[in-house]
Amino acid sequence: MFHLSTLLTNAVPVRYPDLEFVIQEAGVGWIPYFLHRYDNEYSEKREDASMLEKTPSEYIRDQFYFTSQPLEGTEDPSYVCNMIRMFGGAESLMFSSDYPHFDFDFTDQLLQMLRREFSTAEIENIYGATAKAVYGI
Image (cartoon, rainbow, N blue to C red; front, side, top):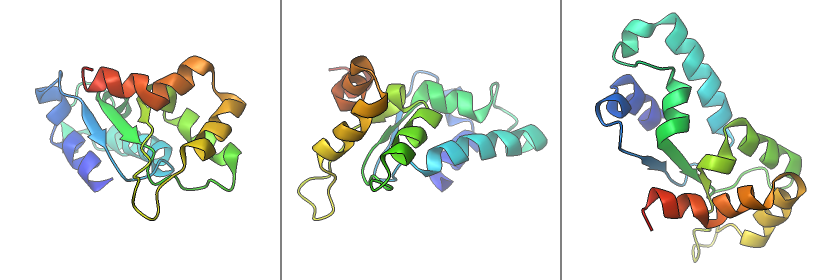
């Protein structure tokens, strides 16, 4: 959260509008909170990030991507799916197992959760299409 807020406050996405950012190994539960909280703070203190031309959440949705590792809350599939929906993860989340580390996420576990609430196209985005687009593959 610190690095993301620093990038936004210093208007890095404004200065480099074609640059895309990937936030790795931070989980997903904090992202919806951050989007709403940072927008709220920005609306009350715009002078702290005076170069921003849009709300912070708009920059995040346009230029930032996140990886799934580590995936918290797997004991509650509804929680995971809601978190992903709340930050637009069908367009910005990239599956990352972190294999072979001892705490890696199993692809089947996330896939089973996503199949409950996400379309095939959204799942394909999370499992590779988004990463291919971001990395120009």
